[in-house]
Length: 231
Image 1 (cartoon, rainbow, N blue to C red):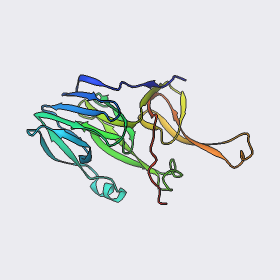
Image 2: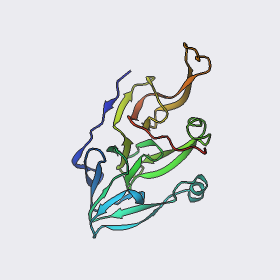
Image 3: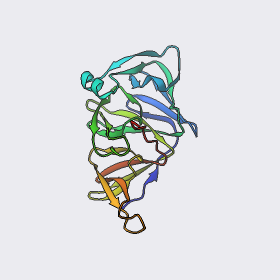
Image 4: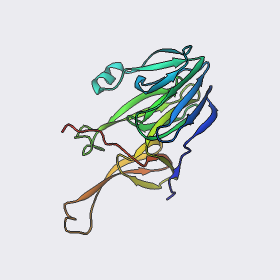
């Protein structure tokens, strides 16, 4: 099995999909985007600063009723150029961009998305059972981002540092359920319950992992935050 490799922790004058962006800082890094003709959308609470000439509006999302029933946002904030805008999340971590060519997509753990270019479509699915013990039996959501009409970028926040492993066809890796950040659509995910084989309480104890099967990429964060349960 290949070993996960640390993703770059900084970017300078990175250009793709009609925007130029920079990632700077260490403990709580900042994403700065130079906007021209391509807008970006984001959750409003991550905005750090912007130039006064940069325009802010609302971006509506598809499947509004479904999103309301799931407790997910139906509106996101959108920024249009010209001008510069910067984002950060209230937590130590690692920011990076995932570049999507036309027709490509990425699946991401909920609450890891930071921003995306306007050319990227966004939807979600609810996963039941995979994280029941972590989420009080409610399951969790996986965000889906795809570049259908043209290339685009999704910017991601991971807690701690983020490592990426590229699995070949049939290759597998087990990841603690709170540790994975994103995966290619070609990567399959299933839950594994493994009992301890030795020890006084071996028969009653078990460890839970998400097993990922390639081909494709999987992102793993070195620090993770479990969402609060109903308790």
